[in-house]
Length: 338
Image (cartoon, rainbow, N blue to C red; front, top):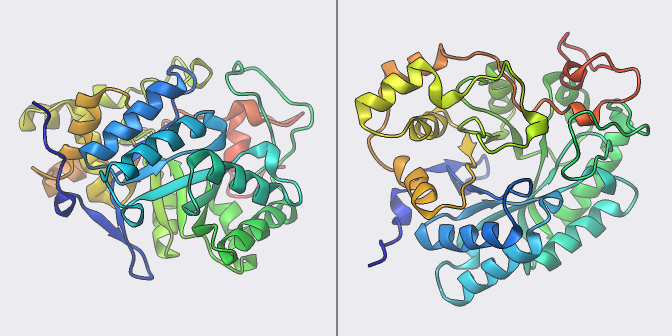
């Protein structure tokens, strides 16, 4: 006997400055390094059946066509109405040229079998392409540092998408405070969302608060520490969030898996986590966890103090020639690295 879907009124929402309510948790679809597109698509269909309404996609994940079939089937079967869904996609680094953002968005719309997206993101703030599945030491000799005017040409194309009704909202991803300070005054349409790595051992409190202070809603990827992330993003010094003593203690107190503690924390903190799983018991429990048994203020404070500043997705494959290290991508000294 199949379990009934989790009722929508139980799922928390984030209220945007304009008044729109967005699900406070979503389903990620980045599994291309480990799971085939059909497996991811089945998870999207199953996730919608269970109650998910926010789906985070991207062209570079190489599964939007299959995800589009799953979306179409879910809508045809009445599992959800289109206006209830919040669909996200992103322009990849090799589509930053003039006219390329529009072409990329239209391709995602075709693949996802949709007339519009709810959110379109600039995946990374530079055109430093690398092939999907490449090794961690792969380097593109054409890579270069972030350039404000170059980025703004990409952003202007995103603004055109919004004006044409192809994307209800536009946003940015993998930005830093120095980069945001450089581009926000130049934006005709401000980003509504900022997708960023967020989990208990990497909370980015300054960037997180900066986004909130500017009316930008954070979306958190790797919300449970991304145990299935690609090998190129693994380092011997990485912290496993589900093994943090603070997380383990809270999990024992609530009688749940440590991963669910991470998700409760994320939603209660105010970000939108987008956990990925192709296993129905997992993606159902991820959703259900944020609808019940909230963490106490003391537990939230314990997790806040558990921050280890451990970035997992370091982005070293995007480094330009003569860059010092992957940290240069993230402007560690408070100014844009070049």
